[in-house]
Image (cartoon, rainbow, N blue to C red; front, top):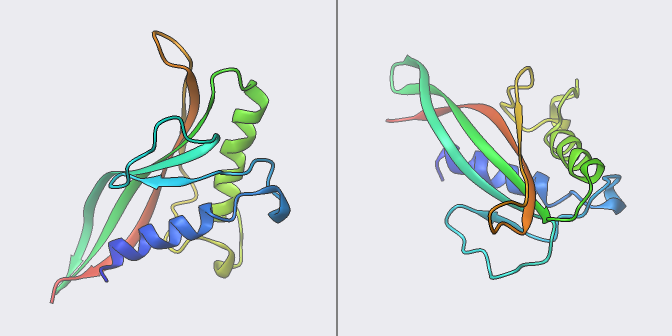
Length: 144
């Protein structure tokens, strides 16, 4: 398995923990990655995860340090209030280990000094709203 795929697997494992019995404010009903088909009208909230970019930041011999940018979109019913959507953004960053000192509590390679949230609203036929959190993860890939 490539290290890039390991990043994706670890991200899924962390997002699967987002539910109230683990101390989070929301419960994700499902998590879909770019290659997975989202069924018509799935239970909400659910997450859609996609790789936005993956770029090499340095090279040493047959190894390269890479920065993978991922977008984690939490989709809600259009009538969901702002507070619940905002809490979902906090839950995502908590699940990834934002601000944690102990490395075991943090998604390996998480760039925790920068992230971005963007919002969508029901409009023009859209019946859902969402928060899209973009994060960066550094990892090393071996090309030998």
